[in-house]
Length: 383
View 1 (cartoon, rainbow, N blue to C red):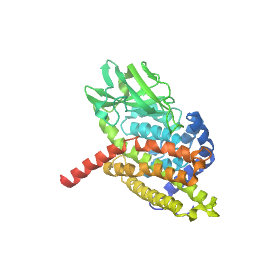
View 2: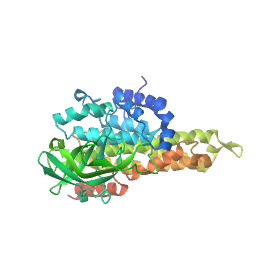
View 3: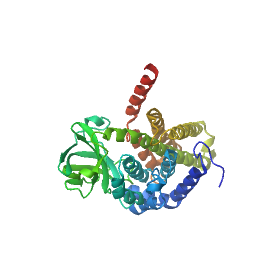
View 4: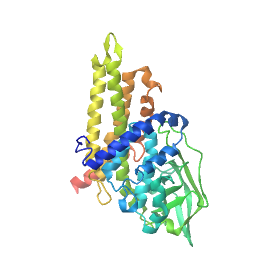
């Protein structure tokens, strides 16, 4: 094995993981990416391959059936997959980070015994229900309620824009119990639970999205995660690794688009010479490279500071705030370098451009990161 980069691959195990995922992406993800984007469907057999490769439980301890790796490993996986198919990667993120990682660190042994093996193998697809039709970033405004009635909680409300909604079997759903946020495991076979028709999207079309509709939904008491009122803690703890994974997805988009534009600019002849001889093209390439490398350094540096027992909201917000626009900007630059051909689906640039926009919205809007950073810096510097 070649020498590894101590920033992006701090150990030989991280380099081995990157090689594994990169090979999987080249041989299995890339050939199907455009097709499932057009079909707007999740490739379930390919999703199962993520389980076979041990990627669905990447942050879960080995003694519980996971890969036993860290936040840097999660960043590597999302980075590499998004070079080819960010939509498929979003389905992976919703399952592995929003459900599996979140579930593991707020569940008990009995709950893990019922769910963990099936979600780590990919037999069950998971997701997370937080956003509501009237409440997104304003999480505390959510109106979904849970009332205990004997051996069940009865949940009422609607969650929207839920990745893996149409394909998922189990969801980590947030609802209010006596005004405080609690976390619940909700299965597709719970009475009173259903999903809407798929919601069609501009990008990330290789992952599916729908509403989760809870109408007198009966959830067993043993599906409460932790204690009543602790859901907000679960949510906030998981947001940091989620945001780093989303930032890594933007980095993957930028890496791929930069490679495409550099190769195209050398081979495309205009006015008797390669277009990379022209200053404006050099500007697109140079600025894209600088922004991509800055993103790489920030995302991987912050990844080392986040884990189950290590918090860094300031760093994870900064990483996503900086990284999210970079994927979109580099894709835009690549499209300018390619001209009309970049706007067509002959090349993956138009798909990557569409996919990139979500990263400025999902997992926290750019504005929410600005708010959090200001709040945390003020507390840190002003007391």
